[in-house]
Structure formats: C-alpha cells, structure tokens
Image (tube, rainbow, N blue to C red; front, side, top):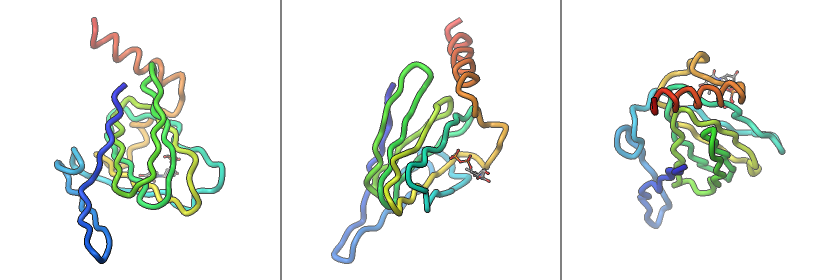
Length: 139
Ligand code: TYD
C-alpha cells in the first residue's frame, strides 16, 4: 500500500511560517468541506470508518497524532507531527486516529460535503465492500 504524504510549501520569513493550500494543486481535489478536531480527550481513538467515495487530506496543524490506514489487505501507521505535512486518504480506506498530543488540532480537507450514506462504519462490512470491489475490477 502506497502512503501519500505531502510536504506543503512553507512561506517562511523572519516573522514565521505561512502555508497556503489551493484546490487542484496543493490539495489534489476540489475542496467541498473543511472540518477540524480539537480538545480531543486523552486516550481517545476515533475515525473507525471508511468512505465509499470521498478523498481527504489530513493535516495536524498543531501538535501530533497517529493515523492507522487499512485498505482491507494492508495496514500502515502514519505519524502527523508537522503543520506542513498532509496525509492523503483515498476512498475505500479504513482509518483510525489516535495518540493525539495535548492541544492537537487535526484539520481535514474533504472532496465532498458530509453524507452519512457515504460512510462504512462496520469493519466487517468494509472488508466485504473492498473484496467485492477488487473482484469486480479483476473479473
Ligand atoms: P464522527 O464521524 O464521529 O467523527 P470521526 O468518526 O471522524 O471521529 O463525527 C462526529 C460528529 O460530527 C458526528 O455526530 C457527525 C458530525 N459531523 C458532521 O456533522 N459533519 C462532518 O463533516 C463530520 C466529519 C462530522
């Protein structure tokens, strides 16, 4: 499984850093929604879902957290600890976010508005869904 992590351009000078993210270039899709998690309580692990048709870029703009990515066959753990790092999460990818540092802010850019029907929140259902998809693709 290929993990796609972006290193965004930093516009730094003696005053500090600034990052600008534009759709279709820095963010590889049209940005239809932005949301963020903060005040995450100690020991919390969240996510536990996949999307049928949604791309996302996760940026831990303050603090750090870990992300488990699982495509149904392989799992990868990615640490997000820099405000200039973006993790690309495609559709059909189970994700769990955990190990949030105190005060961490996890910002998410999404390619679509919030649609509960796009979520797969049951892991066994996710495994069936990706297995079915790969059988359709490979005959
Ligand atoms: P939830 O899906 O539980 O977050 P995650 O699984 O990523 O940890 O979302 C928490 C709540 O926020 C839930 O009641 C749904 C709501 N929500 C929205 O209304 N809009 C959104 O864009 C998102 C991501 C969540």
